[in-house]
Amino acid sequence: MEKIILTGDRPTGKLHLGHYVGSLKRRVELQNSGEFDRIFIMIADAQALTDNFDNPDKIRDNIIEVALDYLSAGLDPSKVNIFIQSQVEALTELTFYYMNLVTVSRLERNPTVKAEIQLRNFETSIPAGFFTYPVSQTSDITAFKATVVPVGEDQLPMIEQAREIVRKFNSLYGETLVEPEAFIPQNSVCSRLPGTDGKAKMSKSLGNCIYLSDPQDEVKKKVMSMFTDPGHLQVSDPGKIEGNTVFTYLDAFCHDEDFAEFCPDYKNLEEMKDHYRRGGLGDVKVKRFLINVLEKELAPIRARRAEYEKDIPAVYEILKKGTEAAKAAANATLADVKAAMRINYFDDAALIQGQQEKYNQK
Ligand code: TRP
Image (cartoon, rainbow, N blue to C red; front, side, top):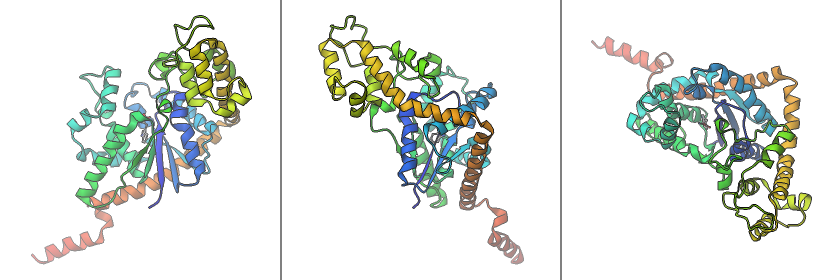
């Protein structure tokens, strides 16, 4: 069986460090591993519209932001197909048929949808499009016969839902669809990078994000004002590591080599943490180290972005090519699905012949 990746993001804003360690960085590694036959990366504008239908220009403008973030993070259009969800019509068509295979109460139990409904205060006025987006996400995954779906932890219920729909489809209509596996970061810090304020997650509305596209001085400013240990007032005070955002970010980003390069007082993060716990290590020193660690990762990303920003029409052309490849793949699956569901009337000569014979025997 071919090894195929499908994953994507909603274009509701620029991508930040949480997206980067949670998925983007891994995608680039998977792309370069040479282990996969095909890789599809989707800008999920249609899904983004399910809770932004009143603001289509926001989605429209963020498509190019996300595309630039992808390319600058190192996704290579000669190795992956980057495409725009709404332009692949087969996805909508598949969704309509998959709707028959899932119940309202099953959708109501989806923990991700539940949490999002609360977050958005939809309560009793949940838009049907939003409520059913897990079904549409099943189409995204199955249309490409994806075997591996690299996502953050919060997306696990979506993959589970997709697997259920695949099993139901195959048992009703015959083996047609491929059951996908989720692929989540092993490092739990990377799964859930907190915001710079120490709050649960980076989120645009909380204003606690460091964006991949932030200029260097912005990154410095944000790190310098990061939440640490409020009880660590003097350098000599013993400090806490748990819940200390600067150390959480170091857990996610730093390597032993970074100490030799930027902070040779310590061999590794454990030594630095020990010193902080004992007292005698100030926040500013740890923050300066984090700035260096982040810059090492972000500087090449920023440089690539600057190049792509010079030729935006070329970026749209990359999306157009990726979308064409995605359409071809999704149309092939749609044809399989329609044949399995016995709704391929005009492609089925045996059907037409068989119906004729029925009438001939009258
Ligand atoms: N729901 C995903 C998110 O919010 C985006 C997405 C849409 C996706 N379709 C997908 C992810 C298919 C993986 C596979 O980030």
